Image 1 (cartoon, helix red, strand yellow):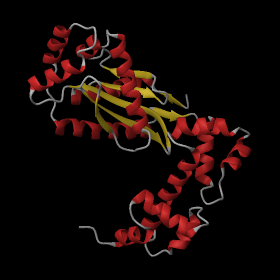
Image 2 (image 1 turned 120 degrees about the vertical axis):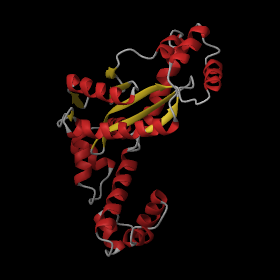
Image 3 (image 1 turned 60 degrees about the horizontal axis):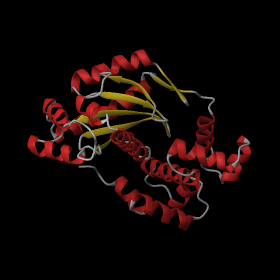
Image 4 (image 1 turned 90 degrees about the horizontal axis):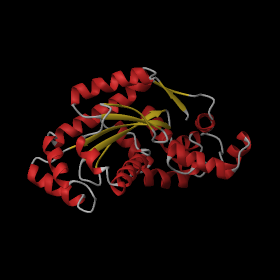
Length: 283
């Protein structure tokens, strides 16, 4: 575990979220191990579904897939679980590193309750569960609108940032992933290579690749490219009159044409187009 958590404070804060939204919220560490939740018990419908081992496996797989998807983005991700209920997950980031996840669910998202019942029962038809009990449990769940779910997911993002700000979640500064991330950030302008990083930390390529995949959800070279383009965007925003070649050099790109091509691929526009959009008066 690359971070430490103030569980008592977290539990109190999650309770506040639930009191406002009436949606169950759970916090996981970076390995997707559950740390704390409020309320402690899952919804009755989910408890019934999970009595079938296949359904339990599907639940865990669904959550882990969402976890992997959200690792590469900074916003929350709303999705339907395998049973047809709505969930949302938001990464907790410290700099470039995901150190945990906030998750809320499970929410009954159907305005037409009969459609919702049919969908959930159909999705769970193959499970060896009491379908009448499941139907009754779903009937007890409030119907939550799409707008409400979207607002709650935005609040989830704000909570994720606040947890770090209030130091309810802190990084263990001496952990190897943190040191590697700091090293990369400090040497973006340099000619960084996988070999250089491995030599600096006296580790093998396989270990570095495993750390990168676990920490960033992508390879180390891909992460470096993303950070360099992000830095280029920041420099273009800060200094719209700068020469594109100077920006490329400041971000560690020795090949100007490659920088132009990569920037367009990752942002949908060339650096010059981005530069013009940054100088355009905002409405």
